[in-house]
Length: 242
Image (tube, rainbow, N blue to C red; front, side):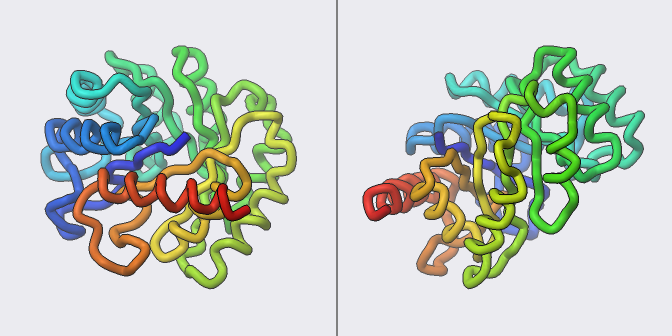
């Protein structure tokens, strides 16, 4: 499985290729799926480009993307979208159009409550376990662990030279991960080394403009589709060379 992460918290300053509107996200998702992506992760945004959990914003983004692609579509529930944990739970419960899955960053305050609300709605939970946090330890003792859709092993080390080692340490901390599937990915200069490691280990991964703005050769990525196509090539090459 290779998921495309369309935009993340990026904005207009990161370049015109980053999709910010529902229509742009839908177009980018369609191109990425045509390039081989099998799942979509998106940050729904307000007209001014801010990540949002507003039911209206989430619905517009999901409906636009689903009109163009047949694959599952998920959204973020990052604390920056709504810092108050109780308000974040209420936002999730107010959604009128539900995503197939939503990521929950396990180190954030209120993570388990948000995850429980999503599970109650029938939405799959991607448990975001960030390196450099206590998320793995929290997840290990969580009663919700066996109920999540999958674990996002998120390597926040942005250095190409050390990201793979950080990824291996994170996977060791995760252990059995409650037996749930693991999606391993990195960010910035660490994105490509971690993607190749995922290929060698046979783990799901993701790539897109949320995680990196650059191709492996350092050239600016022109689209999510270009990143997905290259990601699949790198992933397959890593599997064959392992």
